[in-house]
Amino acid sequence: MRMKKNIAAFFFLVSVLFLFSCAGEPLPKSKRRYAGVWTAPGFFLSISREGYVDYKRVKGSGRVKVRGPIRRYEGNDLIVGIAFFTTRFRISSPPRYSKGRWRMTVDGVELTRK
Image (cartoon, rainbow, N blue to C red):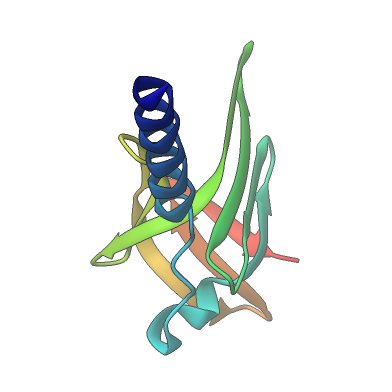
């Protein structure tokens, strides 16, 4: 009986740790311009102020979807994911206002904010 309680306690602890590792990192003041819905043909990127990303990209016959919390920032780049499963969004040109629209270049694609 004691062994079952120890196993249950262990799995409970692992579950709690996993849930806490899923929490997003809210956008700091220096990154608040990143928030919004960014699009280009075949490209959709939504970044919330709470630190969550929803990404969809269609390239040829391939499709990629990523949803998850922002884990950290490295320069202009966003690292998104849960635990060991992360994706880097390479931001070569951070959000800027140009020609009457907000623009940002992610993974080599220029996006505009809706």
